Amino acid sequence: MPQPPIARLRALRSVELLTPSFTEAADFYQEVWGLETVESERGTAAWLRGTGAEHHALQLTRADHTGLGRISFAVATPAEVDEAARRLLARGITPVAGPGPLDQVGGGYGLRFTDHEHRLIEISAEVDAVAPRGRDGAVPVGVTHAVLNTTDIDASVAFYRDVLGLRVSDWSEHQMAFLRCNADHHCIAFNQAEWVSLNHVAYEMTSVDHFMRGLGRLRHHGVVPQWGPGRHGPGDNTFSYFTDPSGLVCEYTSEVAQIVEDQWIARVWRRVPELSDLWGTAGPPPKEIRCHMAGSPDPGPLSAHKTLEVQA
Image 1 (cartoon, rainbow, N blue to C red):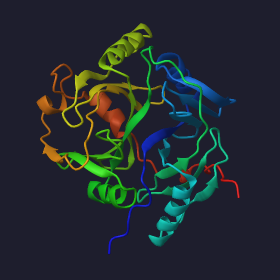
Image 2 (image 1 turned 30 degrees about the vertical axis):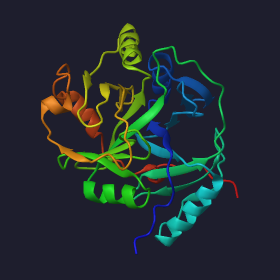
Image 3 (image 1 turned 135 degrees about the vertical axis):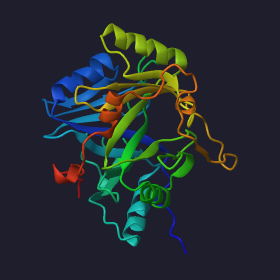
Image 4 (image 1 turned 180 degrees about the horizontal axis):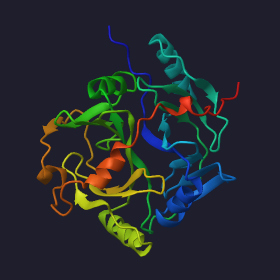
């Protein structure tokens, strides 16, 4: 009998990025990208929020290499975290931290474990609340999805579906798979690649108007899209892609398709320019952005630095 997923994930809460260019990246994400610093630690780490309710959407950590630090998902209660730990152990997966109170900025109760390709996954509940922030500005609400490069897309989809409980929304031939944890079309997508790495992180803009005004604000900072603006076929979301000072790809997006469970039928999209960009404004992705999306082989954060400890 198949084992149930470890938890019901409510949302993608935040991502952690590792960067040797910490100061430049922190300045970019606050002054140019539009996030707001919640807390920082003297040139070693920074936590930045959007206009949404999450304590932070992005954690930047100084490291000796560029890569993905941690992906954090929200669950409803600490009891769900404890049950997730039991279900992980039943699958032969030992958490690297927790379950317990998280000794980190934003607090919370959670656990961390690695997936089959050494990415560090966190699930958490009861993270600190933050004061409401107005949404009139053309700045991100928060993180809406992360695209991950994988050497085995079928194994990756199976792990995130069977262990984490994500549902497949669509495929782009056998090159990309889009998975969801709530009504948004995708919170995680996998791209078949030569090595494991971060492809890009996408940040939600409140509307198409906020999306376009955000592009205008970036332009005033001398930053122009490397691909976009356009509208994707899978997910139906708008897109514009940029690179940060670390060379990591970040995306502004809006209006992602909303899924009604039990009514949605996943489809396989053909990989042709008119379906990757329904507007026809962006064309195919240029070589430079594809190179940044490929990144470099990432052995995972635990090979380079210790995870923050969880209180006993």
